[in-house]
Length: 158
Image (cartoon, rainbow, N blue to C red):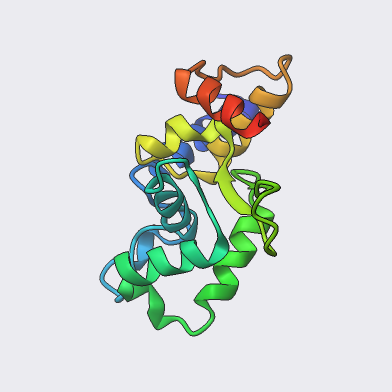
């Protein structure tokens, strides 16, 4: 087997292990008092709980505080949430409406990641590939064309 085939097989194996809300980095933490879900999963679940798939940062904090109290054991959890939102392409900023001139903006899920996240798959590598395929039609991957994506895009154009 060539080295390239071994790398492809390894990548596929890692992607399979990233399903069910876990990442490779934290899947070994079960039994150590840590929640097996990733920070990305907590944030995505919070945003998807809103009917419009968008929340302010304080709403995301509030949701995590209410639904995942074990996660609050880390003193820097809020910093982690802000870092994850701003450094993952899976999460996008959505400007507030003109008639709501307060500070801040909404956070939402990139349309290419909605299907995966709704199935409980929070693998960062797969999400990055879906986003590339969504934004670059020549990228060799398939992105599901969903009514959800159409509705999401129409709602955010206004």
